[in-house]
Each structure stands twice: as C-alpha cells, then as structure tokens.
Image 1: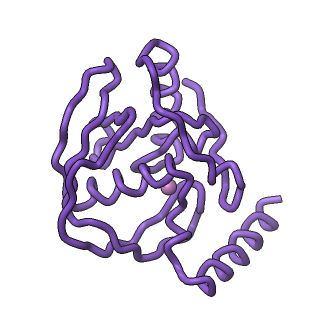
Image 2: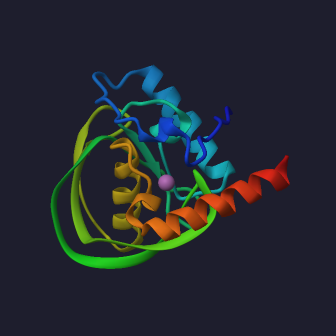
Image 3: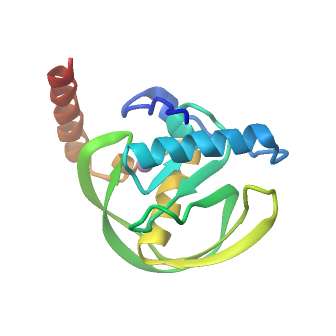
Amino acid sequence: MALLPILQYPNPKLYTVAAPVGVVNDEIRKLIKDMSDTMYAAPGVGLAATQVNDHRRVIVIDISEAHDQLQVFINPEIIASSGTATCEEGCLSVPGIFEKVKRAERITVCALDARGHSFTLDAEGLLAVCIQHEMDHLEGKVFVDYLSRLKQQRILAKLKKQQRQVM
Ligand code: NI
C-alpha cells in the first residue's frame, strides 16, 4: 500500500491540464491502486491524478458506505448532461472547506476502466457531482474557482491559518 502526498490548494500544480492516457497498462493500474489507497486513507470519495501530481486523465471514486465499490475513469468524457443541481462540495486538496457548487444534475460519461475497456455510465446525485468535480481537476480546475472572489480570499486565509496550526 502506497499513500501519495495530496497537493494542497492553492498549489499551482493543481492548475495543470492532464494528458490522455495512451495505453492502460500495469503502470496505470499501479497508479490507480496508489490513488485508491490514498483516497480511502484520507478518507475521501474521489481523487483525480492531478491531486497526487500525476497529470494523466485518471480518476478514482467510491461513494459507497463500505468503501468497496471503487469506480475508475480513465480519459473520461461527458457525452450528455441535463438539469442543474447545487450540492455542497469538499475536496481533499482544500481540507475543511465545504461550499455549494452548481453543476449538471444528470450526466452520461464515457471512459475506460482499469482493464482498458470502454464503458458508458449514466450518473445522477452524488456520483454525478463527484465525477464532474474530479473531471474538473483534470482540466486544472478546483471547485473553489467557482466561488466569488471574496469567498476565495476567505478560504485562502482559513487554509493559511490551518497550515500554521499544523506546523
Ligand atoms: Ni477535489
């Protein structure tokens, strides 16, 4: 089990746009294993490779209570979306901060799984929110970017204070 360090907002590396995965091989599967170990240990419900400073299009999500339903999305694309839903979101890169973000209510996502097989999934509710949140990371976007300038400044001040307490 390998736990990877998670980049903390506002680390500029979080603003990197990830590159598509060419071949889903054992190296990618190792990354997936390390990312899921890191996500479960945090604990969190989703993690994008961007957050562990690997800039390839890989996402892991598990919204189950028992943490036994890992979902892997490689090179994900949203091919359809509808409705709007506002949900309170948090992020392992922005610890202790929870803010409402407006997103599509339902999405259809197409991706590769850990074996490199393509699949299409209809998602709504928390899963849809999670997929959109993690896909934003691959585009170099953090949920804080959706908030007002004032809220962003407050969050930065709060995070600085938290970091001082840790050190
Ligand atoms: Ni996040």
